[in-house]
Length: 267
Ligand code: ADP
Ligand code: MG
Image (cartoon, rainbow, N blue to C red; front, side):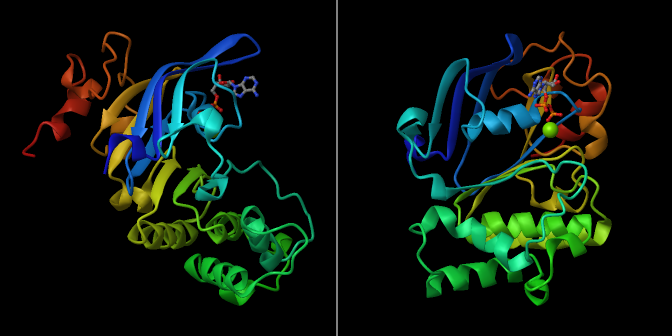
């Protein structure tokens, strides 16, 4: 596969909000079929980065390509699925599980046409992947937070994206639902999807991760092999004395022994 076919390639990206720099000097590539965990403390810029990569937040600087196409020319939005970070309470909108998931087919359908057989198959398949096929007729508001999260994932899945962004899908979700989510993502990964997952902690998702990217204060502090949750949250992690180099794990610098230890084992 050529370099230009990379699902995501951002070079020296920056984002400012209200004149305040939020992200700086972001270099990030995501390879086809890769599962990348985007980690880091609250406020480090994870959601802002995902919004920038999906075009919801403009870049103040930098060059972004999606599937090898310069962002301004990119039009294949049906290839991209996005599950935004959940806001606190459920909206109470009386939509059924089926309706919410069906809305994920909108980018593939012509307006005001009835659902085609392939639409119905994709919706049913998405519900099966997240384990909610028996809840299709239920109102979303009757589901638990973790189940609602799975409905949102099924909605994104129904569009059959190749590139999938999920922002903190496990935050506030109980362990059984985290395992259900891990099963769904494992199936997606098995189909060759590229996944960028924002997570404060990985929990049951950890075995799926190919690569970790850790944000700190609006910069990439680490980009390399997966880290255990406790390594990401180490207080010394990504301190300014560890110079940022493209694709260079911070662990290879001095003063980060707790992070360096597991990475310097046999490869
Ligand atoms: P994370 O997802 O890692 O918790 P965010 O990307 O949400 O971090 O936020 C990064 C920084 O940008 C924070 O300092 C946050 O306060 C700021 N920020 C994010 N969104 C906005 C916004 N809409 N208006 C002002 N500041 C924002
Ligand atoms: Mg966030």
